[in-house]
Amino acid sequence: MIAADKTVLVLLAAGRSTRFGSADKLEATWRGKPLALHAVQALKAVPFAHRVAIVSDTTVDFSGQGFEVIVNPDPDEGLARSLRLGVAAARDVGAAAMLVALADMPRITTEHVQRVLDGAEGAMSIVASSDGAHVKPPALFGAGHFTALAAMTGDAGGRTLLADATRVAADPDELMDIDTIEDLERLRAAG
Image 1 (cartoon, rainbow, N blue to C red):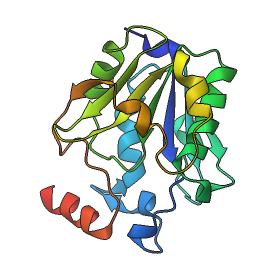
Image 2: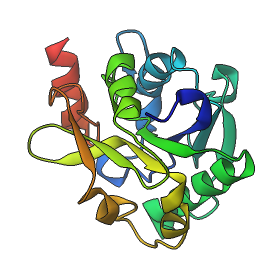
Image 3: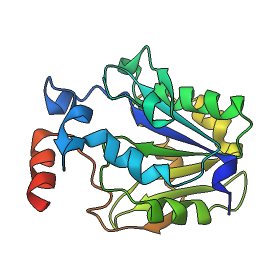
Image 4: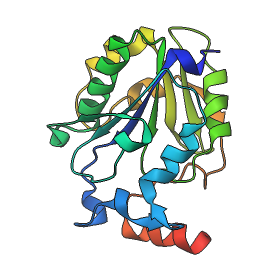
């Protein structure tokens, strides 16, 4: 296990959200608060060494939630650009690992994130979430993978590394991410 207090949380919130339309999806409300704050609240109970939110155009106040806010100046470069910024932040504090989570996953739970942390065994660990069909974030990358993550380009991000990840199962509803208005409507309809 890699302890949370040796891990940097990297919350990705810099996506272009082109499939969602012109609105800031992270500001869209569910259960009375912005979508992004649900993930923030679930992650609050985990005692990470440091919390970083990689943002672009959102107005969600991550700094007020205890996150260092890093602006991705080039979100059009894809997800890999945000990951490179997260790796730099993890290296700056000497982290043993970084846990990558998505701000548009409002149903993620503290318990699941702890299981991901528990699955890590050292610097070469990669532990990812699985809904039974897909491997996805939240995902933990041991420090031994920081160089590879920092060299990635495009929108695939760390996906290529996840192929060999230790997988931690979760209910597909818990790992639902909101990419479209229809996704948000399904989330609201489900309660």
